Length: 243
Image 1 (cartoon, rainbow, N blue to C red):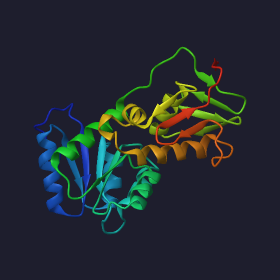
Image 2 (cartoon, rainbow, N blue to C red; image 1 turned 30 degrees about the vertical axis):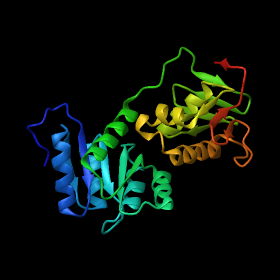
Image 3 (cartoon, helix red, strand yellow; image 1 turned 120 degrees about the vertical axis):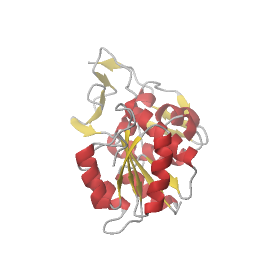
Image 4 (cartoon, rainbow, N blue to C red; image 1 turned 180 degrees about the vertical axis):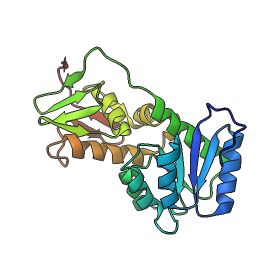
């Protein structure tokens, strides 16, 4: 049940875990942070809560009965872009990549401190709310093959609209806005994810891969997003045109 004593404007957080003790731990600490909290004890119930209660964010365990957190996330992404933070007792890179591939916004390894959980939630909510800078021009023309539609937050690749995730678009926007300049890893992480993520270069590397797969004709030999090893990434220097 939602704590009705909290302010009606407080963010609603969904916590999903099959362990009642873990749900109580997270609820207590999130309510102390001023959030409203609802619970689900498995993946199927989580999908129902997302549809019915429209939480601002979900914190979901990976290992659960019926369907695991990965499958629940896949089904949630069919109906909602709600930010999802995955909880796992394993920190293997393959698990992290699998979750991010399915649309997770962040990962926390158990056990974790209440401060870490609260900080990651604040960062994810902030990323979801930050609006991109506005412009009086709608489309940045890179060349005949690639254009960026700022209003629709998508790429137009070889004449076809390509849907981008919110983080993919933010990353592309910052790269495109600095043509020809190498942007350090730390700067991109701070601009796209937040200052707390300055060491999470694996996130950046993965999302650059996602972007290349979507906008490059040959992702293995990119012509738009270049890697400057040990430093950062550089978008091709182009003569900016707008439509």
